[in-house]
Length: 382
Image 1 (cartoon, one colour):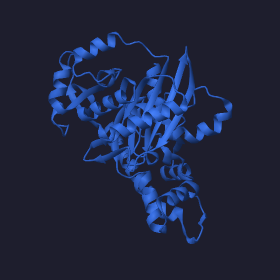
Image 2 (cartoon, rainbow, N blue to C red):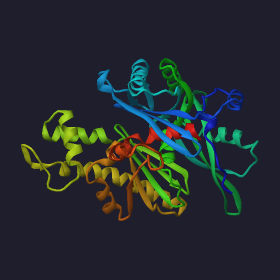
Image 3 (cartoon, helix red, strand yellow):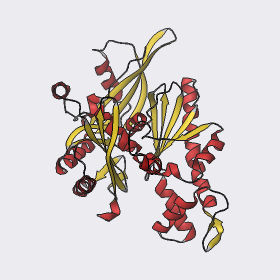
């Protein structure tokens, strides 16, 4: 038996107790307009969506690079701890909202996958009343932090019979309370109402729009880390983050060609993995040759995650879906298709959202980078 689950228990307003949360949810009303906010390592992206009936509309969007207002990144990754410059992040969010003339004050923030803990385990089938205590007890074996320092939530993926015994497979999610408090402070400083918090992967999953019964690997190639999540019949089964990322691709070009970071980034975006693209004064080198070892490392990691899933679930991944700004690296989609010998596509989060036709090319180009922000905003329109 499959049990559908709504992750609002952990992420809506992030109440400290179940009683506080129940009280909050009983008074919550659905917003007709909502902001989706994605705080990345080097940029902040915000989407404002509205909804009238079943029609979803793009109202505004905006982005700001960290380098515009601050010498460091908006966030850093160190031993699974997310370190924000709260004041600068709030300042950037306010600037984007004002410049883009956004009017909604209700916001959903994405929590980066690398600062969340995902794990799977099995428990004997039990009643709904017994399950929370059993999960909390089992969580102590899987979460690398004291339970008092994290907020837990879980999903029953399915029930199955193993050796004549009925078991439930549990997907457990844990987020450090320190990170949750940071988001609450940023929202307050930016003059926003924190409507919800949600892990990035759930925003990406929602931005896929079309449901599928197939097993897919959803790959988000971020600036600092990449995440591969296995989605089976529309349900998140597991999620893995690894350090290979878009910034690392730029760094290796910069070092290989002895050019500055900005020049290396432009060369990466222009040439990518395309064939026979000489690089100015460095015609003897090709961006493709520089990038391939690192691209192959990313794809090998994805392949390993897919194979590990097959060993456990006996279900093969039928499609690879690419997201994140680096998903548009020239030649990457085709290279992935040849590597995996299967279907590969780039996420289009604006597929079912109304916007002026003149923006179509712009939406296609910015879609992979804005997929998380779109997924957050869509959550607020449900």
